Length: 75
Image 1: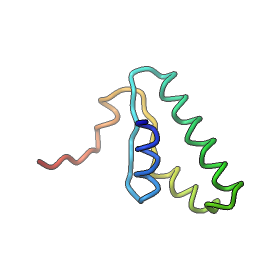
Image 2: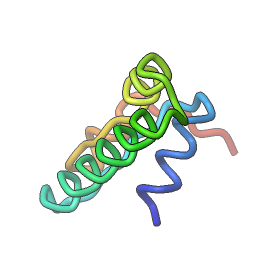
Image 3: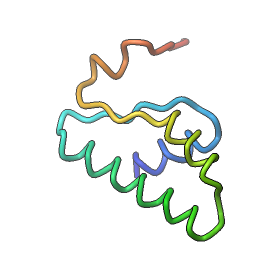
Image 4: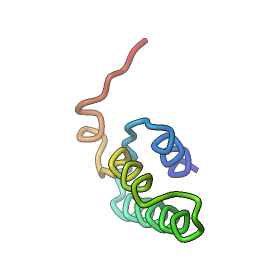
């Protein structure tokens, strides 16, 4: 579910970093997102340009420290 939320946020122009300490989980999430987005292109639901923008906003990182380096958290 976290991957779906991250992807949906990237679709709506948010810069998103999905992280987990387990590199296999991060890899699987990236593969799922790539497959999903390619399916959107093949079904004519999104253009290649839209998908490229989404992928540019969606980051997959192993390790919390690297994931939050440039974060901006407001109270």
